[in-house]
Length: 124
Image (cartoon, rainbow, N blue to C red; front, side, top):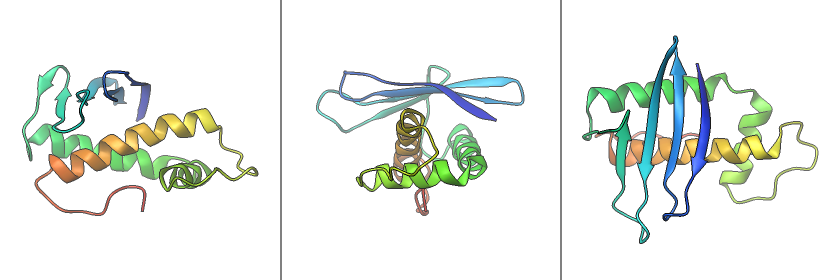
């Protein structure tokens, strides 16, 4: 499983990426209008509803993807997400970690606003 083609846009911060699992790709788009909330979530160009099967599967796949990242990368992402300056001794590439923070942001937003459940956000 991999997540790639991570992009953020100047339209207010919309984020898109592609999640590939078992040879199948899903395009994920979290729209952020100029003035922020509310946000629209689309998977493969289709609007999704809170608690739907696509959201549940997306969150499970993103959790698995996160768990499979190297520990040093997760630690660097944690530092960036906590708004700390990254540790200079990190072996993880900073640009990749910044991209990953965008995916983590989508995960946390979807978990809080589309899952219909309250769970701990990633990273822990």
